[in-house]
Amino acid sequence: MNTGEHEETSDLTPLGYPRRLLAPGQTYASVTETITSIPLARQPPRAWYYCFAAAFLLLMLLLVAVTWLLVKGVGIWGINIPVAWGFAIVNFVWWIGIGHAGTFISAILLLLFQQWRTAINRLTEAMTLFAVACAGLFPLLHLGRPWVFWWILPYPDTMGLWPQFRSPLVWDVFAVSTYFTVSLLFWYLGLLPDLATVRDKADTPGRKRIYGILALGWRGSALHWQRHQSAYLLLAGLATPLVISVHSVVSFDFSVAIVPGWHSTIFPPYFVAGAIYSGFAMVLNIVIPIRKLYGLEGLITPRYLNNMANVMLVTGEIVAYGYFIEAFMAWFGGDKFDAYMMYNRAFGPYGWVFWSLMGLNVVIPQALWSRRVRRNPLLLFLVALSINIGMWVERFVIVITSLHRDFTPSAWGMYIPTVWDWATLAGTIGLFLTLLFLFIRFLPIISISETRELLSEEAKTAA
Image (cartoon, rainbow, N blue to C red):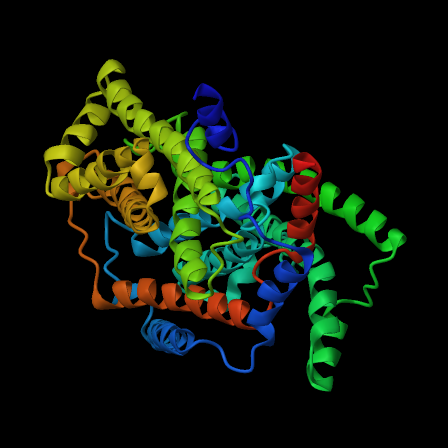
């Protein structure tokens, strides 16, 4: 009797999940056919058209909002004195944070030999690129005169003037551009073998030609694979410190200031943990619907979702600890301005926003302790959505509540976002989703070569 129970559960992890990452019955042929059938399909599912149409409408809203901004200036936003930073910086930090999970899953987990990254790394890498593209818009739009953005680049002009390198906004230019460049190279390099597979399976000369050009002549020779793997590991090594450095630099936008609520040494690790937190939440919000829509449950199994939920739970506890330490240090430090800032944050005019943040980011994610929640894709999707909204609210609390009441009461003021603030935010979500749906339609969303490799290793383990 005991032997039977042992045989029944020996293929399960202590958490009750199969030890195999892929569902039983997967073969080289089935993996290739399942993944390549998405970009090579004559017509995408009807749901894809509906979702793409909605995303494209939001993208057109962004075009209208940006056009009106360039015509009228940043006065159409709700920014004022003392709140000179508004939705633009809130959205910038939020989008940069979302882009972190892609590099974390692709680079760090690759170097740590974590095989559960295999079926989701391609989507997360693409998500990184699209999120950074959305984030990069806001510093340019916030300049007021974006057509002279190159003034913050280090080029020797005729006046001999250079950017102020002690400004963290200039650091952002270098950090974000470097992060985007490395992430793009890493994503495209990993895509090359799969582009060649799609090229070989394409059924029309036009598609063969297009995918052939994108595959850069890949033939899968031993020399190709040797150079590919060396370059892939090298870029993973370059991308890994960027996960830590980029959002640390973004946190310096706040922590190098003397504004109460910003001037804190905890911000770099606090921001990095929050970035991975929101990034994994966005991954789940993307992967779960796509997994259902295209029938990818055999490749993106519940164990993948469980592992992402576990990472989200850990980083969520780090973020909650950061909230506690921030309040504790405001009291323990004895600075009356910091103490008032925390009191005003919780019980001032924006107090309801603060407590909404606590509910969305701290209370609701505690459901992830339950295996039943981590096993249920719908519940996991709702928890991830709560975290994404909560992390945006967190950035709003950090930026707005620290600025709207300065050192002197005569400088106090309220910040009320306008319809153009909301339109710009909704428009960048449309830009993100439009790029995502185009990626899903025309490129393989799961790494074929790495899934085959995982399949081979699992077969060896089983043997």
